[in-house]
Length: 60
Image (cartoon, rainbow, N blue to C red; front, side):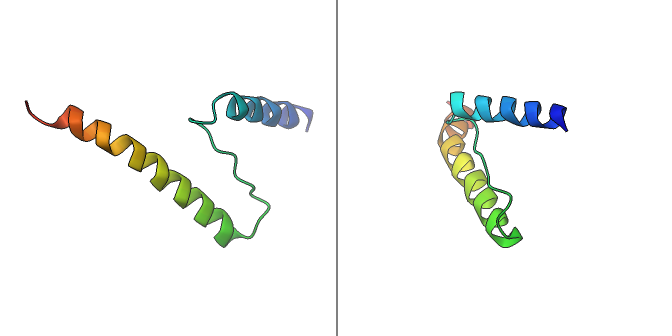
């Protein structure tokens, strides 16, 4: 169990150091809430990536 706690602490440190890249989801909530939080985070991340991707992919 100690290895899992150390790994969790390491991931939380990464998330704290790079909040623009990581999100911490409280998975102790009910499954629908967890799903909604994850889905919202994924769509928000994709939305920030899409304009740059379109500019790179456009001909010209």
